[in-house]
Length: 385
Figure: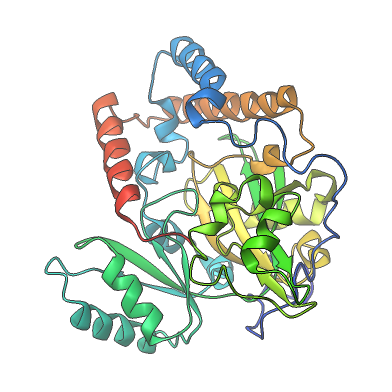
C-alpha cells in the first residue's frame, strides 16, 4: 500500500487482520542499552507532575483562565482534557481517515447488572458490525490503559461484562494483532496551514522467555526491568505464576499499550519522517476542530508508519494526552520536563487562539466534576491486562 493512493490523500484502508505476530516483530530492535528504568519513571504522580502544576498556574495567570485547555479541541467535550468519550471522538473522523479506525462497537452495561442480557446485546452488536474474536474491551471513558482487556471468546466477554460497572459504556474493538504500536503526538495552531508531530513513542510489549526450568514468577523477578516493577505483572498473572515455560517460549506480560501498566516506551522522535507528518496532518484535518492530541496506532512494519501508510488508529486522545516518549528509560529528568513544558505551553497557546475565535472554556466546577467522575469510575473498572 502506498503512502498516497491514486485519487486519495490518506491511506485507503487499515491493515488486514492476521495471526498474532512474534514478540516485537515489525518494530525497530529493542535498544537495551542504558538503565532498565529511569530513576523517576515510577515516581508518585503528585511528585513527578508538581513542576507541571506550577507551570499550569503560571500559564493560567498569564492567559487569565484556569480551564483554557478545555477549548484546545473545541468540539471535544472539555477539549479532550477530561471526560471525553473514546467512541464519540473516533466517530468524529471524516472521509478516508475514518477507514483507518479499527472497527468497534459500543455497549452500555445495563443498570440492573443482568449479565446474560448484556452478553446477548453485546454479541448482537458485534455480529451486526461483523466483529469477530479476538476483540479488545475497554471503558469508553478512561485514561492510561485502565480497564483494557483482550477478549478471546464468549467466556472472556461474559466475565468482562460482569466486572464492568453497571450503567456505564464500554467499547469492543477489533484486535489488530500486530506487535507494532506507537503514540503519535500532533499539534497544529489554529490558523496554521499545517501541523506537525512533536513526539513519537514506540511501545514494546514486555515478554519473559522460558528456560524449561523457571516458573513465570521466577522469570519476572529475574528480568532486569520486570524484576524492578513486579507489582505491575504479578496480580494480573496470578493464576499462571507457577507455570514453567518450555525453553524458548515467550510469555507476554502486558497487553495494554500503557506505560503505567508495564509496557516499555522508547523515544522514536528520530524516526519521524515528512511522509508520516503529512499523513497525520491530513488525518487530523478530517477531525473537525482538532488541533492538539495523540493518535495511538498499530502497524505491521515501522517502515510503513514512516511512509504514512499501513497503520490502524485504535484511539485518539485530546488535550489530556501526553508526549509519552519521556518515559524512555534513557531520558534525563530535565529533558522530560523540557518536553512537558513545551507541550503544555503549546496547549495553552492553542486554547488562547481558539478563545479569540469565539470559543469559551468550561468553568472550573464543571472540570472538577469531570475529574471526580473519571476518578470514581477508574476505581470501578475491571483489572487491566
